[in-house]
Image 1 (cartoon, rainbow, N blue to C red):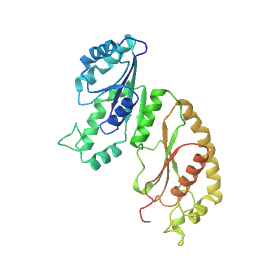
Image 2: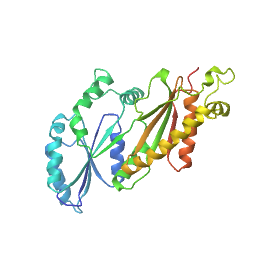
Image 3: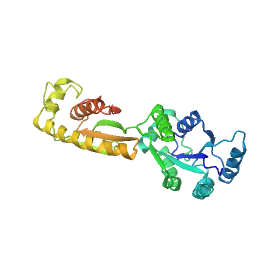
Image 4: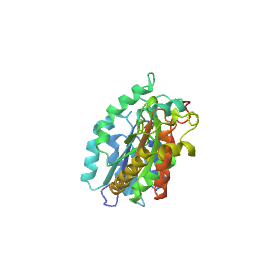
Length: 289
């Protein structure tokens, strides 16, 4: 595959991170897709694609950690193809361990690299095997907070080259139950007035107007929100400019029912009012106070 118009995507990533979904998206975009082609056959396969009638000039190849010989030779394969003039890009799909374990638990599948052991052991082993592939990535997508439709949309945007605003995944949570692993920006709200200590508000959540008013209309709440919106208003356009697909923002209080929920609801409404796509999750709102 030596034509300047040839476009090859290698898709690598952790098992359970969404490689099958990404490959389906490439197929929908007109790419000829192949899973787990042995490394030594890649140049031959691409030459056959170039000689086809008409030539197959859009190809997507999935990289599997179970094929260790391929992983060892993967950097050399990519370098050789680029030297031959092919347009080669590497997409790496990542995902938080916690989310991967949940996905395996829900599907009742065994991890391919730990068929007799724990899923966690398989994930750890796979991460080590994929270090070189990850280092070669031209594009990285963290699928922790994505559904299949969002992942397909991101792949389509990647291929088309269209620039879209960074999607904000906004998560409210309680520090009592641990910090979400996928959070990239985290704000601790435990300094705000706490409705838990108000008898008539304790059983409610931050979605209720009375709780929201108690938290957000306090002097401290108003001052904090003004500064936080200024900060995000400055930061998010920078992410847009860099082509960051999405950012995960966490706002936490003690239990995840009152202050964090109220602030997350307010931020989500504000950002949506600016035309930005926001995925809002209240992780701990259903836990009893």
